[in-house]
Image (cartoon, rainbow over all chains, first blue to last red; front, side, top):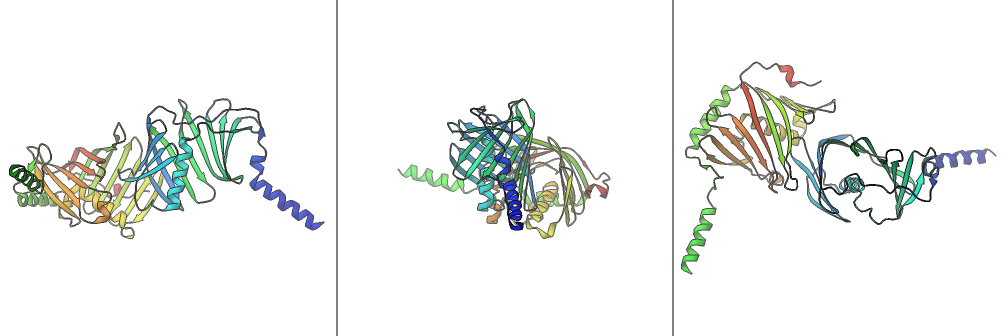
Amino acid sequence: MRNLLLSSFIALFLCGCTFGHYGRLQKTASGEEPKPIFGDNFNSFLFKTNITVYGKDFSGLLVTKQMSPGDYRVIFTTELGMKLFDFEFKDTSFTLHYCVPQFNRPKLLNTIREDISILLMNDLKGKQFGHYTDQKQVYSIAKLTTGKISDYYFTESSSGHLAKIEHSKKRIKKTIFTLNNYENDFPRNVIIQHYNIRLKIELNLLKK
Amino acid sequence: MKNILAITLLLLGLSGFAQAPKGFTVMKDTTAFKNKMESQSKLTNTMESDFTQEKYLSVMSEKIVSKGHFYFKKTNMLRWEYTSPYSYLIAINKDKMFIKDNGKVNKYDINSNKMFKSINEMMVATVQGNLLSNKDYKAKYFESDKFYLIELSPVQKAAKDFLKSIQLYINKTDYAVDKVKMIEPSEDYTSIDFSNRKTNQPVGDEKFTVK
């Protein structure tokens, strides 16, 4: 009996950690498809950016620029103007144009690349989403699954603004993107918080 | 055929000489210039100025412009502060470096980090114009009617990877650095223009400590 109780607690605890959050989502017949925040307007966006990785702080300016449909350039420089990395995302391909040795570590570089790629939402066209809502029906949630990875796009039903992206593996949260302070339908603040490594990226819009 | 060969050889030969940027000629008397810079640097105990920094990225249609103010005090004290469009402060006080960002202050020992050491050297030398004596750079000297232009190319491979050259525009009237341009191998660059400069005015030591 005691073992059964203990097992039940462990089972409940595990459910709470892994499946609870997503398990509570209610499936809907249809819903909002996530709208890319950068859109197709060829504008450039300038963010004051802080990257905190394993206790080390890097700060600087991040620029995103759409070069042609489906082609984005993303450049990170220090405040003093020194270029730290220069990425290009073209449809599903990626080009590393430049990177200083401090960032040229495969795991870190791939993680930042994946984060930016998720934020650009560049390759969502034609993808099949599952549609859900939360219990309070605040959000319209679109789920995109590729293998073991699922991305959940939380669009606030009242405003139509993308409020959150949850990037998960086997239903365990890996990374949460929070998009705040919308002005003219664009978030002035974006926080990318990782849960499996000590990495946080914060973007604050300076100019678009 | 002989003519073509002669012209080609001539062109190849010419390209080996220091090519002066547009509006500049190769400086005639570099020794006099270096002596004057050195004596001017000795006379400067404090300096402050506004600055405008422009970052040119070939992929962008507009430059990224940021503005701020700096203070310098002998020996080796510098406060470099961006005020627009963001707040960011670097203060160097002898062997300590402070960075204030988002209201958070980080303090570093300059000697503990090679990168900070080179940032320190570069910033102080930029303000004072004494990069000329630095063995890590090879210098070329040019002049126009208003400016001396010193083009410095890094010697070490590690620096060459991210820096093609530094151009210092030095005003012929007061031998002060009016503009610095840092050019990357990709030809993207950062330029810093100085204005409202004041020299040898009292500057308190508290400017170089950040809490």
